[in-house]
Image (cartoon, rainbow, N blue to C red; front, side):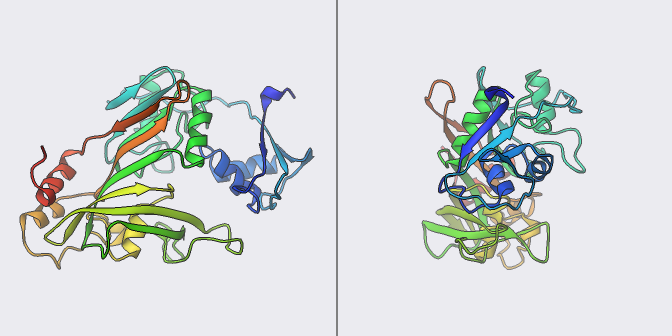
Amino acid sequence: MSEAERLFHLVDDSTAGLRLDAALGQLFPAVSRSRWQRRIEQGAVRIDGAPVTRSKHKLLLGQRIEVAVQAPAPSSLVPEDIPLDVLFEDASLIVVNKPAGLVVHPAAGHHTGTLVNALLHHAPGMHVGDQERPGIVHRLDKDTSGVMVVAKTEAAHTHLAEQFRARAIDKRYRAYCLGALATSPLALVTGHKRHPKDRQRFFTKLPPPDEHSPPSVRRASATYITRAVRDGISALDVDLGTGRTHQIRAQLADHGHPLIGDALYGGDKLKGLLPTDTRRIAEQLTRQALHAHILRFDHPVTGARIACTAPLPDDLAALEEAICGPQK
C-alpha cells in the first residue's frame, strides 16, 4: 500500500488516553464513530505497525496510528434542485445560510431533501470525505438556522476538519432564551453526554471530564453574552468553544434558561410570561430560537481569514426586534 493510501496520526496530548474509535472520530469528524468502529473491526487500523481490531483500545502518548483509506463505494445520494442561500463560494469550499427545517445529511427518516442533496445538485461531483456526507465538516440541528461551511475538495475537507478539531474556527450564535442570566458574560465549561433517561436529549449537569471520566462524557464550553432582556426573554450572543450535539440547547436548559420554542428542552412553556407582543411573537415560533450567526475560519488554500455572516430569518428577526428594538 502506498503512502497516498494511508492516513497517519502520532498520538499527542489531545488523543492520549482515548479509545481508538473516539480518537479517530475526533481526528476525522466527518466520519461517524460507528463507521470507524466498523473500519477498526475490518482491520483497517494499525498502531505502531500492528493491526488493532478492538474499538475500545486505549491510546498511549507517542503511538503511531495508521489508517488504510477505504475506496469510496458508489453513493446512493441523489442530487436535488433545492435552493441554496450561498454566502461565499470558490473552487475549495462553499458557505451557505441553512434554513430551519432543512436536515444537513441523509439519516434515518430523512433520505432525501437534505442540504447534501442540494449541494450535489449545485456542485456536481462533490464527493469528498464521507460518501454519505460529502463535504460536511460540521453540522447544525435540523431546526437551527444559519451559516455552515462545506468542503468541495479533499484538501479543503482535511484542512477545515483540522481547524474544527483544533478549535481554530470562531462560531457565534444568536439565541433567545427564557429568563435573564444571573451574570453576563456567562462562561460555561461542563461535561456533556446523552441524557440517561431520554435518548433524544443531552445532559450537561456534570463537571468537565478528566482522566477518570468515561468516554461518553465530553467537554463542552461556551460563553453566553446578554444583549437585551425584555418581557422575560433574553437575546444572547453565544461564542461556542466546542461543538457538541445540542450543546447550547442543553447547557441553557440545564442552567434554567431553555431556548424559546425548544419543546425538547422545555422552552415552549411560556405560561409564566406576561401577555405582551414579545410573548405573542415567541409563541408563533415552531422551532428553537437559535441561529448560527457568524463563522470565521482560515481559507484552506490562501490562508486568509474568512468571515461569513448569516442574516436572521424572518421568525427570529421579529423576536430580535421585539426584544432589542428596530434594527438599523
